[in-house]
Length: 119
Image 1 (tube, rainbow, N blue to C red):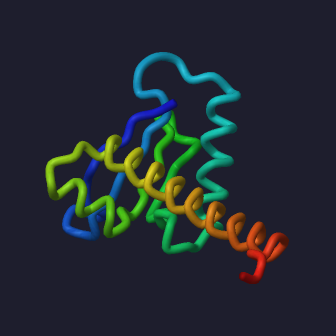
Image 2: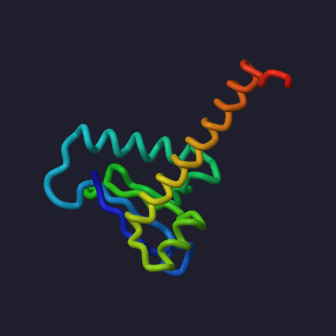
Image 3: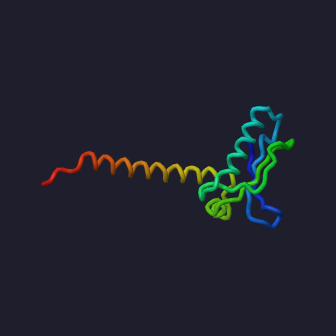
């Protein structure tokens, strides 16, 4: 849907990712609406697992938003990982962590429902 570039907010500010919407070709109204909605939601969310929006212009000829890079992404980028790959790695790491948490909860629930028989 777009392209992500690595940069710095204000030139020498914090490391940031700049996401643009479909850098090549014509933009359709549905894509613009979806991108604008994504920016609005991102501006309202505050979590250690999400990037903070530093600036955005979803109505520009070439819509964009600038996100502060989380520490894990910065670490991956510093190791030479391209920013888009770093973002995908973080998503996969988060999904794995969530799956492991669900598995632990499931096991606890199963053990509580079926306690081991006394020997």
